Image (tube, rainbow, N blue to C red):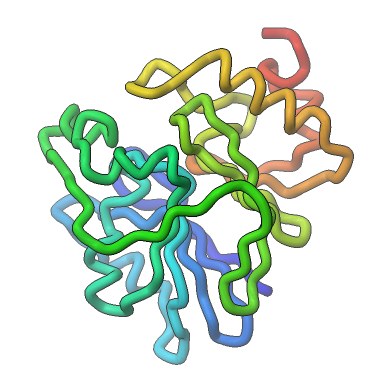
Amino acid sequence: MKCYSIVLNPLQTNCYLLEKNNHVIIFDPSMDIGNDMSSLLAKIKDDWTIDAIVLTHGHYDHISAVDALYELYQPEIFIHQNDLEYLSNPILNASAFMNEHFVLESPVTTIKEGPLKIGEFEFEVVLTPGHTPGSISLFIDDFAIVGDCIFKNSIGRTDLPGGSSEDMKKSLDYFKSLSKDYQLLPGHGDRTKLSVEKIMNPFLNGSN
């Protein structure tokens, strides 16, 4: 399995592409300025099959390219059931604050915590709310795709609609309890290691 990444949109959101045997899952695809998707499409090889799009949560900067990708590839689209409302509510998905008022039109499949098999990929889905009620982290091999839960030396904000500092603390406690040293793939910023964040991240090491 290979993991590719690209930084998109003015908020510098990380989009990840997991590939195995030319089958691909795209995580959190978004548009650049002017609804430009050229840099994302340049990452997709001609011989790839796009099996699915997985959304770590429902904010605009993580979902704005979903409809355009669905038109091109018809992948199955997954989001946690707790964030389903975000896809049709511009205030919840925060697009209203950017004068976009985005509503997702494509069909979606809701997922719950636990095992998730998509083609040749097998994930463990963990609900890690705080940034949004349906924020999820997906674990596969040595990787954890954590959305806007944990960043390098920081965490996702909890002051947007649906955010909860209490829920975020519980999600961080879950990560602190893990013994495996996952490579964390965050929604913004650099990749990091869980062991590093346990030492350096003030929200995980107790100094905040």
